[in-house]
Amino acid sequence: MKKLVVSSGAGISAESGMMTYRDAGGLWDKYPVMQVASAEGFAADPSLIHQFYSNMRQKMQATVQPNAAHLGLVDLERDFDVHIITQNVDDLHERAGSSHVLHLHGELMKVRSMRHPERVYQLPCDQLTDKGLVTTVDTRDPYGDPVRPHIVFFGESVPEFEPAAQLVQQADILVVIGTSLVVYPAAALIQYAPSKAQIYYIDPNPASVPSRVHVIAKKATEGVAELAKLLREGQ
Ligand code: OAD
Image (cartoon, rainbow, N blue to C red; front, side, top):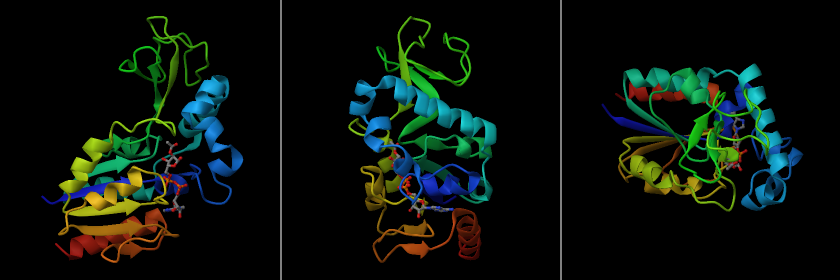
């Protein structure tokens, strides 16, 4: 089976009702990115950050479902060895049923100990003093240590980048979906594709990419359907 590696960004979840970050009216228009998504912002006002991610988590669980693009990628597993690398902190690829999902920027449904970062907890977690999806600066893990969102903030390293780059290096087909390609190192993943790999990029407002990339300038749901057709015809 050919290895098909997907690199997804906020755009794949837009039709599910998750806000993108940089589109007009996106998250970073509403909330200053350096306050809610940076290491400095967390140090300055950790309460605000707990509140921001708790709100997003509650919204995601209450109202957001995987869409036809997430499901279409699961369907491709019948014909391809599909591995997903996502910049998204939502869990829509997992809920759709994708078998291999690597989160480059962390996961909204997880928190970790601030003293022992290797202690990661899935929410809702009975072991935490605050039950449910909401965490605060007073939330403690079973060892009495404070926790923080399991999110990669600007100014922090991206520990999953190495395994992600290795996956892309093994790709027969790379599919980039719904990302503005401005945040590094994620945006650099495309450069790791072997020269013989086919590369597709699905985005209604695509960034500029090398000419070898086949651009499908459509929304994710339509674009994944078109991709599936192209790939099956090409087999
Ligand atoms: P952006 O908000 O920067 O870009 C969203 C992309 O999705 C744009 O290129 C849009 O054109 C596209 N888009 C919008 N609607 C779409 C649809 N229905 N179907 C397909 N594409 C659509 O989001 P990312 O590139 O994912 O990091 O942002 C990268 C990182 O920046 C995020 O992971 C986040 C943010 O800061 C952290 O929080 C660590």
